Length: 160
Image (cartoon, rainbow, N blue to C red):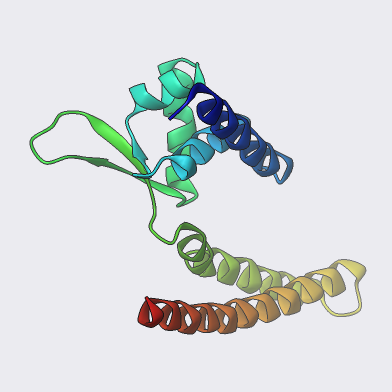
């Protein structure tokens, strides 16, 4: 790979990360995620990430912790090795979305409880009921969308 290719990939990686930052992802976590996305293996050690991004190990550690917590990546270790790595989930975004249901269900349930507690005649009760209805709708839509996505993925696999 030429130096120009490497520069173009690095610029793309930073643009990709910036989009994530603008949507609320912490900057270093976004940069780590983008670095994993553009790496063919989707798997890098903390030292490799630090080297690629020109940052210290502690910045990488915090970013990986965040990405693991939000289920975008996983930590692992090669058999027989003492070196940890960070790996992007296969089908990362569909995995991320499908794993969000328990949290969405909690928001829906808590909003329902709050709406019942505050009553339909109060502005707060109405806001919470709207929140409940929205999360109920969202969960149904995600379920249908994920089923459709899985069908499309199956068709894609069959056509290869």
